Amino acid sequence: MKKLIVAAVAATMASASMADISIKGDAYIQYADIGISHNGSTTVNTKRVNLNVIGKFGATTVVSSFRTDDNDANRSGASNLHQFYITTKVGPINVKAGDFYSTIGLGAWSKGEKSTDALSLSTKVGPVTLGVYTTTGGEVDNLTTTTTPATNTTPAVIVFHPGTKHIASTTHVSIAADIAGAKIKVINNPKAKWTNLSAKGTFGGISVAAEHHKQKAVGTNAEEKVTLLHVGGKVGTVKWDVAQYKNKDAAAGSNAKFSPLGSMLVGTKARGITATAAADTGEFSKILGASISTKVAGSTIKAIYTKNTHGAADKLTGVELIFTRAVIGGKLIANLAKVSGSDMDISNATNRGVRFDVKF
Image (cartoon, rainbow, N blue to C red):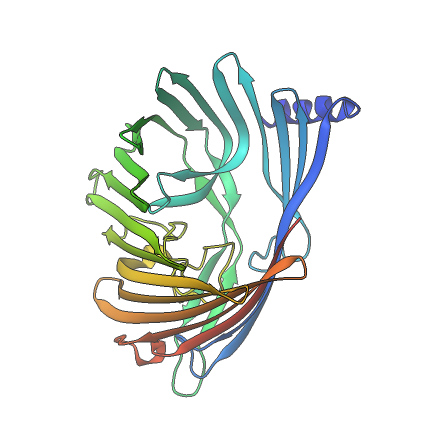
């Protein structure tokens, strides 16, 4: 597969005079003062750069994506090729092949999982889109952490462990259609015995989205379920959202996504990396919250309130205030996040962060 893609890249570059070559990317710099789960506070400064080299010729596109990332020991000192794929069209069939990230449903169960030597095919049959995705598996970068809890005299210590993770070979099929104004999609993996159903649409100015993921009991593993409900709208200049996430038996992994509220407290993997997040989305068994936002003098101010269950029984409350403003060709974000009511007193604290994002 990789040899095929390398050949495709070479062919594309050789035809540079006839092809469309572009470079796109994004970057951020973040400074955060972390109080949650620490004795006192600790400063976390992070940065990340994505650089995408894109070659287009006719219906074929070749993408090489490079990343430099403080949060990954393999990428902290130099750029690392983290995506390399080709997209094209063969008759009525859309083809994507190579090493790339993919999302199941709306991302509540799996968001941005990387696969190597993957192949995605899709085509329309009347009003229905049929698809198949398969990967032979392989090794991908996998950064893990271990945390030494804080004591009365020492702060918590997080140790990063660079390594690799094996992605097992897998195949799933999908069917999608627009029904009564809603986009409905069903994905089924017969080997892993899971089914994902998602739906989203806008009705009378109210956006509605839902996802239900169910994995049957396999061997000694119990049945697992993840559900996401999201309703949002606008009243005058105020935008509002209400969302609920349930994660039975920790079915969702660390790459799960809970994005409806735009929280910077829940989901460390959201928006690249959010240093002010208290935990990954998959660590919560339940999240229920609401957000409101409005524009004031060219800036956006958002307030978020959530009632969460961290793990199986630790019930806590999250309150956030997020300020966003476009400045000097980028976007400046300042946020304040407070946890209270946790069984762990050390978690009842505040995180503060300032972040600058730019796209080019």
